[in-house]
Image (cartoon, rainbow over all chains, first blue to last red; front, side, top):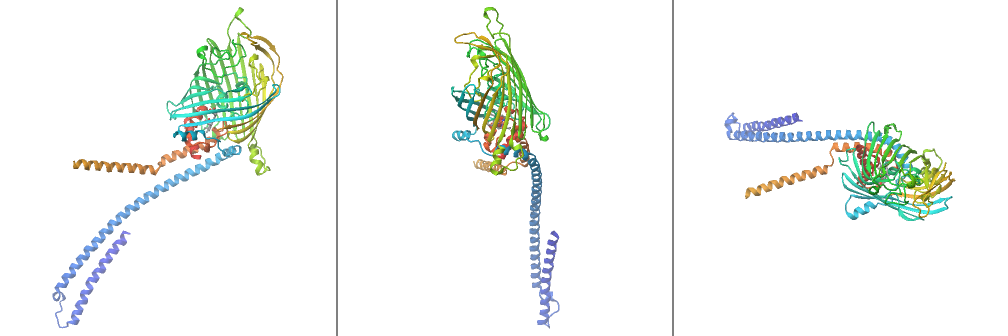
Length: 537
Length: 99
């Protein structure tokens, strides 16, 4: 490029020189032709014209130098521009390379996840939650820190022995208010309408989720009224769109052996100990302790007795001097790279005082597993309650000694999309894919049962069967779920109540402040059926 | 007086220039490093979501909620699940992007 330039300039010079010189000689020739008799020295003959030519030549040279300088300047500028462009091109190339790499990773991970996502999509179409309360309220308030979620369900329950044929309606709303990056309020309040009237359902919650070290640290505090983090059910399976059954397993439902909610402070968090998906987590908490329906301030029954119901909420510790301490650990041993689903193993213990100096101890173990169309969960738990030691005239039936309760459940579900079904056709196939079959076996052992607790009024999650209230309750639940969307489900369940051995029946009859005791044999079997449409939004 | 006016003028020009270059930087969007980090998080979240978020209930669709709502929901879900912080961040990135 530069060389060509120089040649060009040199060429220009040469041609100028030729032009300048050639006319001179021509003129000399001309003059000699026109004036043959004159002198042969042209310089002497025309000194003025030579000077002029010289000046012209000089001016021309200067002009050429100027041109050359400008060319060089332009060339330098151009070089700079080219260098800058080259830099840009190489930056673009490397960004391109990164993008290509990213795309390759994306494609590989896509292939990996395609299967799982595909499975999910088979069961749950891309429909959205039906209401966007939060959005509406935020646009009303003009700020984006408020979200409202919850659920609603409407169902119809039938029980043979109790003669139940009743509709049940339930809703719960959960406001979430994010006060800052590190603190959020979470609440739960709900109601249920059934033939027994309208009442609040489930524990009312109100807690603060606090990340004292920021969201990057595996430490979180939960302060206030929270779901009891014993095992997995109350905290993780409670809402009707989450629990694939209409009812809860006996140990967390009609025959609860642990309190469902608590007032206190939790510290919790999780870390990855191995490959991606191999996690371990902890939850430790201190709260106001469990309490029972005879507790001061509650008094559904007037005196503590073996077999009585737990209070829905621990929170009467001012009157009971109750306190509780709990710890739960969960282990997820399978890395996601194995493509073997998510397996969870857990162990919990919860101990404290339920009344003054009287102990309450409990512990439990459990597992949960889900892979593709298949899921299963199971838990076993045991509680021990130290009763009063009354003697003589003060003693009454069921007052004293120890109270033990054990409960367990195991459930499994299978989505039909897991079964090959090539000939169903376009209409049936997607509907077939959304069906899940479920089975659950649950049981509770306790020495006594309280006649005053026996009811056949169905509420959401309770089938209305009086056979549930047996000292050795056993239940087989068969379920058929049709999942319209991930959180919209039409559930149908048949419960076979198959109570085993009997025990003691305590009864506060009439205005009696002390119970009578009688022994009961195995309660008769029963059957109940429920169907319910539930929407989680 | 004149020098004061000149100084004010110079300072304003400098500040205006700074503001404009900051604005230009904003317009240019995240740096390649930031983009790479987002992408990594997204991939991790994409791998985790169908397994982690399908463990207790059916995985909820990313399109169901607005990004600010996912901020809040993940704050709540990482509590019930006790998610390792990095995984929570990855799933959040996935949910907000994939919608």
